[in-house]
Length: 427
Image (cartoon, rainbow, N blue to C red; front, side, top):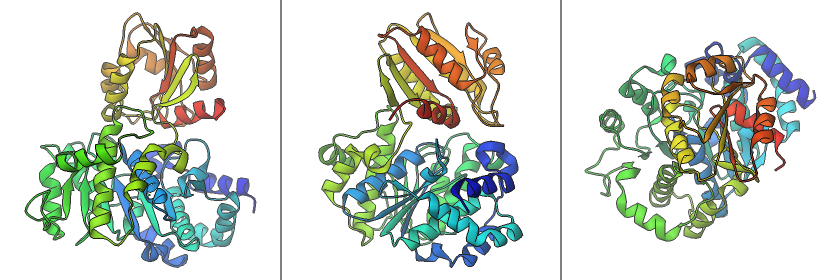
């Protein structure tokens, strides 16, 4: 079986969430456990850091992986969705899984996959965990796909659980309030396994404390030796140490301050409460070179210098509030914004966040997914001057043609639009 035949089979028989949305979602762990058993229960042989959260879990996962890699470890990294190639989802020390390994896995297990009918993400989870065990990684950093409690990756018993933050996203699956969503994310917290929460919120803090108490990891406070749950944004002493030990990091978005603090606290917990070797120099070098070490793309990434062209994968109001703030901080005379979203996001809220005025020129487009809002819908929701161009490549070309050398172009609102943009620009 060729790689192309393998991915055609996966997409045709089990369309992924990024293509069809809710129809691809299979909550619960029964299918995953049956699939894991079929491929040798690789989840039982992984030392893993499990990372959940509404936003920032991808960046945080990459930061942790980069620091561990720079500390001399062989590090598996499982993330989703991919921007250009499916192989991006499964990496070891920054190198994507070989296409041949994907093809061989599908060919070997196709009969069982036909019988079980797992979701696309369940299959990718089994493939990723199997590959990490086959390649004998020292540690794997595993990003949750959706939610936590019922996510396929939650078959793991990790050495550390990390929850970056809680926002209103995927409310049709996880609940329509912050406490309800927090309870789903808190499902990755395991008995006697230390946990780091990235951001404190008055509506969700007690959800995590209650879960920590249930799992016997609640001590007397975030800075005591009895405690096994930390709120990273409350660990001011660790922030001071981070600024001394790792003053530079390659990720440029304003919101990365939160992710970097969460990753740093997680690494300190690994150092102090596990036997995973974390070096101070590894944290410094990993943070400073996270993109080049892990292959991370699309986080306030500069695609072109003239005109300045930036893309970012922020795709809901919780993430795009930081993007909007950063767009306002750009000093370029004119800013051309190529923007598209999918139909299960809080588009109305996002539209109120985006900057407007004479400097900002909007080109709305339709991301390459069945879940996309059309460019015309987006323009109507915007309700101000702008242009609708369905084809993303044509929309980007329009911005390129009209932007002067001193202007800026921003491309974002959807992972799929960012992935399309990355494929158009040389790396």
